[in-house]
Length: 72
Image (cartoon, rainbow, N blue to C red; front, side, top):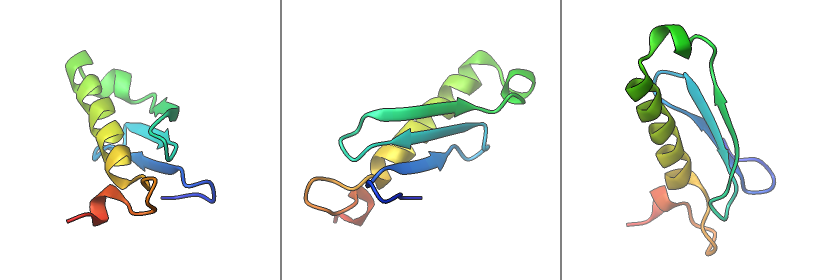
């Protein structure tokens, strides 16, 4: 999801981690679902964080106004 400032907010596939990222690649938020501490091991949580960050990075608009996912 994109907001008016060009930031993107996404979750990992398990919906344990939500990441918001600005157009310049800076993280503005990283939220962890409280159920993650019961459902995930530490390495699994780390993987979920990385997955969400990679998804946000791939969807954020670049300086030329094109999302990385739209590039050939």
